[in-house]
Length: 128
Image 1 (cartoon, one colour):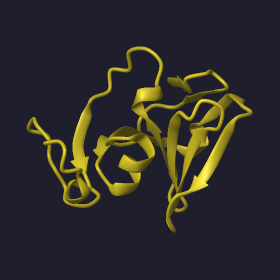
Image 2 (image 1 turned 90 degrees about the vertical axis):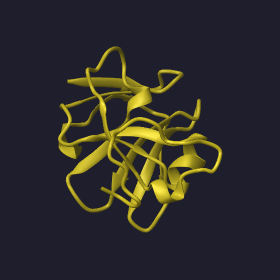
Image 3 (image 1 turned 90 degrees about the horizontal axis):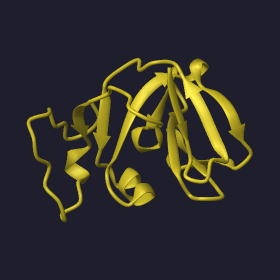
């Protein structure tokens, strides 16, 4: 079970374990929303349970999905596609040690020019 919350604690949740590989996304939208690339892990939408969500807002960022954030502190928390059974939890908002590890970098063709991607994880020009 994964647990997470926003910076101010107004949004808190639990979710079942990962259903796929954790990724670092370098797309323009993720960078603009978070200020850099972000790391996310998919879980089943049906496993996401909120303990607190009074400040949770969903922003339609594209024609394929929404991004969840706290409107009080600004924490970026989720990416949820309109299709499919998964929601991506942003790993920086997860509580404590998770034991999770990144498996790949995606959308590297949109990577900012101010950094290089190091390491030997697979890199995909677009999504995985």
